[in-house]
Image (cartoon, rainbow, N blue to C red):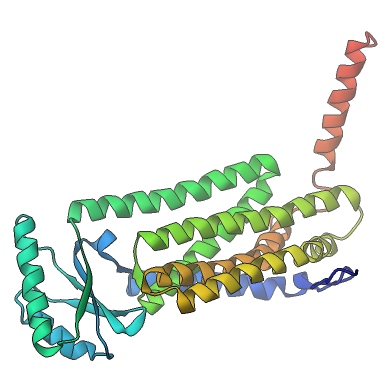
Length: 324
């Protein structure tokens, strides 16, 4: 029985032909994402912003402006409202009232009573509270976790391959993370600890995909020392293309199902992962590999290092035999 091949063995797509367009396009997207985060900011959830969050479900979609006016009349401060997964579910975020748990419960009851007056069908699903101190610590720890993960990964690739590969992988990771943050700044989807977990997962996936391509590049550098570097990179990408496409498409199908059917709790995580898989696949092909050319890697860049290593081994064996 003949096995089905999604990508034929003789595939030779000239990816490096578009390397300049892809790199500058990536730079433009990174700049746009940074600008969006700086100007619009991220819509931090209660985990990061602190405060009181209530999730309310209605039988029919509601007008957010009308519901906002109702919430504001409860005397609990200005409410920040947004749909949560679908038009019938609304997340209400309020400032955390001073005092103990009794004060918080009193505010929750006031808001619920006001909403029930105009919306008999309101179903209050959950209430969460996070203090400002805890939210500040979570922001710091979440950012530190992403930064340390990226640095540790780059150091590993540096020692596993060469420094040029480490720089290329680091830029690919920055590309993937920055674009994901820019997407959340653009859409104003809630950014909470679930999204941090998604970004850390994206970093791991992007690393895995990039290392597969880099490992094939290193193998081909040893096999084809007289081949033009652009051709060698094209060959390496095409040789790993089947694995890349199968893995990415399989994950996208699963994540797409979660986006549609997973409900509001998993919506942000699933969207972040779906976008991250797409940009991670793009970066491993059009960013990580072409950057090696910009960093001066050629088909004989590492021949001297390998030769000197072989010489040291031979010298050691000769010394052991008493011939040195």
